[in-house]
Amino acid sequence: MHLDWTALGQVAAVSTGVTVAVVVVFALGVLGLARLEGARGQQNPTSALGFTQAALCFLACAAVVAYGIFLIVPQFH
Image (cartoon, rainbow, N blue to C red; front, side, top):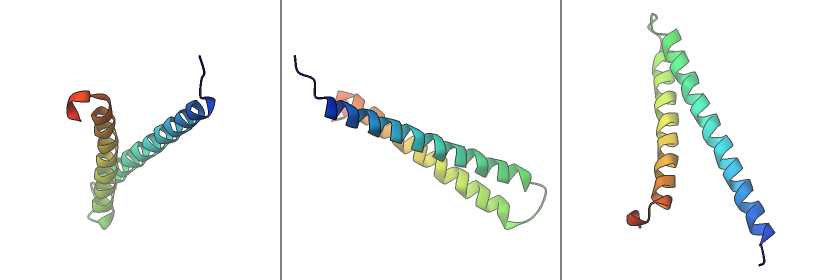
């Protein structure tokens, strides 16, 4: 049996990179929620910015998860 070590390395590198990227985007979403909570008592544009940041980051994470499920489930193809 012959293993294509280069392809295995590429898959490992891409999966590690995407995992780190999703974790960073999720952490930025949590930061946006923290900004929203910190500015809740005050009337300033930071609360809107925090909500927008959190919404966009969590939507991006949900899109990555949905794409992964699309790739795994054969009935979606």
